[in-house]
Length: 157
Image 1: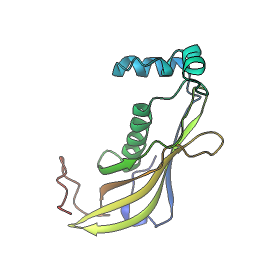
Image 2: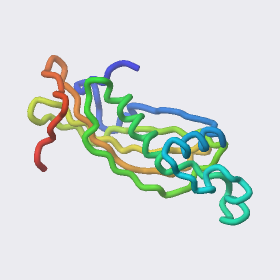
Image 3: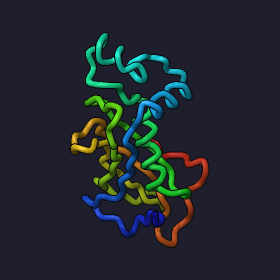
């Protein structure tokens, strides 16, 4: 992916998609083990569907959170800074799904010599159903401008 150039962005532009899947039971089990979340709805199909009456094994909310952050970090590139992110879990995603994280530019501002890119973000399944809508703001350098410092100290809003 080419580095994000603030000066080339347009409000309404879909700027990035990031696809993962199909999500398997193995993926869910490994994620659950990594974060030590042993709730059976993520790896025990008979329990999830029989006891909890769910449509299948659920994709972890923390995995979806990570997926959105990863998508934004890839979009902003190694010199950008993810400043804000907000999302909500509206629908369940289940094992077997192919999920797409996406971002669309909703606001562009130049402040203190940096470009602030605000995006509508979300996760859709293979049927186009949105499960995790949200928004995110990143900070990137302007064309020919100074680099975003690390760590980035955001302005007071």
